[in-house]
Length: 315
Image 1 (cartoon, one colour):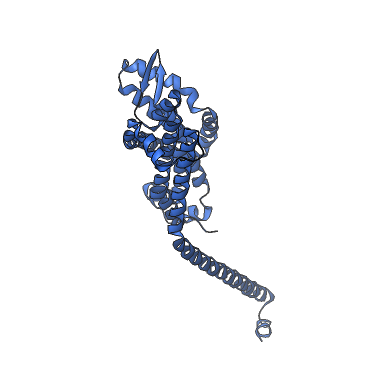
Image 2: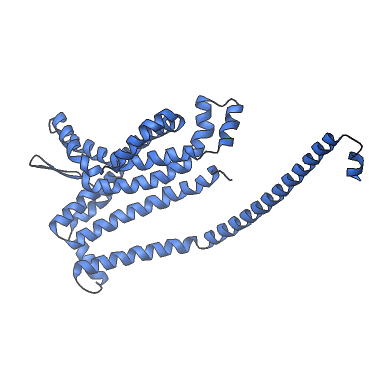
């Protein structure tokens, strides 16, 4: 009936209305398909959350059992016996009174990593925002960043130590500054390239809509850029802290100009344990560092990763 009525109009009008009806049908079919997919995603995510809540405590139990097993295995290696008894483990731990300072060492190493992370995140966030939004800067700076990040952080550490210690006149705080600088060099590239990649991944539709609504400057950064790069910051931070732990091991035990600068921390404790040649202290220092990393993952990074789900674009 509809085509019969439309034939009374001109041929051009009929073709225009036909194309409009066809586009409407295509749109409705896409809409139905997307709603169906979204319904499947929601049902799957609800099932996943129920399963995750059901086995949440089981994951903690498995982690504790694995950590205890690693402790027993490492102490067994230290004793050169198959499996030590509980009394042997306690006696061996009591024979090393310096183990009681491990919580303080863990806190000091974490504070150095936190200071280096704050500085690295500050400058990489600003640099990433400017570089990613400027094509001219991207062409100039990104190749330089690529070359710089390929240079090992430890290769620059002797020059940093010499410069800082000479500039400070050998003050005790100079070794702290050198340690934090090495931590920064071990963290910064993970943050920078994740931030730049997250900015480039923002859909053009979002950028055009923000421009159409007049979002510029601080408003654009606050409502578009920062939420969009939040997942990249979290992922880059997890990688950066892994690199920071590697740097802290080398930066807390410094030998320069015939003098040795020892900073209290898990890295220096591990270095001294390996130099002494005591397998028990090496095992305990590794377990302590692993415990701190697991605690940070459970309390901070896992929670932040869950929050990143709210800021991901759906295509």
